Image (cartoon, rainbow, N blue to C red; front, side):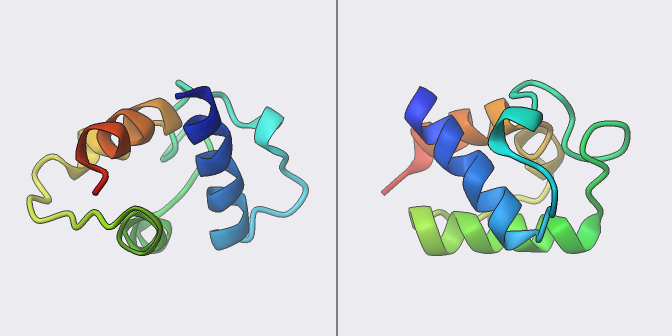
Length: 84
């Protein structure tokens, strides 16, 4: 799970062009949106693409997306449960 979290942080930094941010700068349980990393809805689309492209996971139920996308930890848990 730690390797997945590290990889996910690296993928987020690359896909979202988070310049001057290292994986160590991203708190695993901190919010990704709002007060945390300050991501927005465009970034959410990029995260959906990461899930589909890298892990073969499609988000069908957007109702759960807010919970899934809360933090790197919640994303990693979701990937771990749904990875193909």
